[in-house]
Image (cartoon, rainbow, N blue to C red; front, side, top):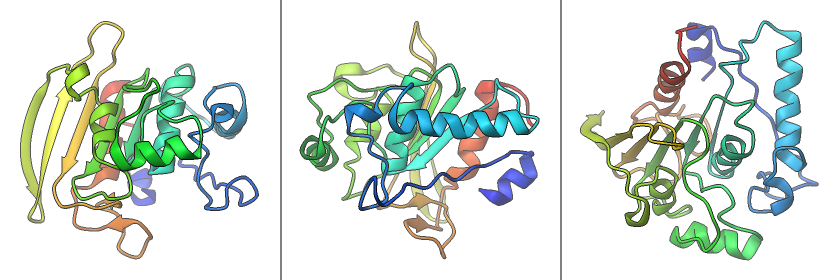
Length: 227
């Protein structure tokens, strides 16, 4: 992401969770206290963005959030609770906004992709990546984030391809009514790891497709401009 940021003239911030807030260093996306834009972790993350925007020449119309796993779930929270701040979000191996209300329901939706609570497509344009062999967060969560589950089928344009021999299916669902444009990547054989990530990193699969580059491309498409 740093390399792409240099190419595209982007500022990138990497917030870190404190162990005192979560023993696994994950964002508490499943806790209702952290599912509202003006309080909890969304407020902290929004504050970080606001600080950067005040001290740098930031285009307020092109601020984005992206994350993997719990970070992806928190990106879904930000895309639903802070559409005033974030123009688009990228969710890799994540879960829908407010799809859980405690640890027990979080584990259940991670295993099955079925949530009794609300959830689904965020309020801003969204790009979703999920691997078919993700045994940590069920791929059905990615389908739900894109509105591709049978109960919320939106239709869309689908293409298939391959990156370094790994097949993928990309479905793009246009904006309709209050629902924003969504792009969903289903990556065959990918586990719980960032697609196209640096092999030296944790939870990263270098084969591809390149999720970082595709997310930045999507962000610029939906927000306008190329810098």
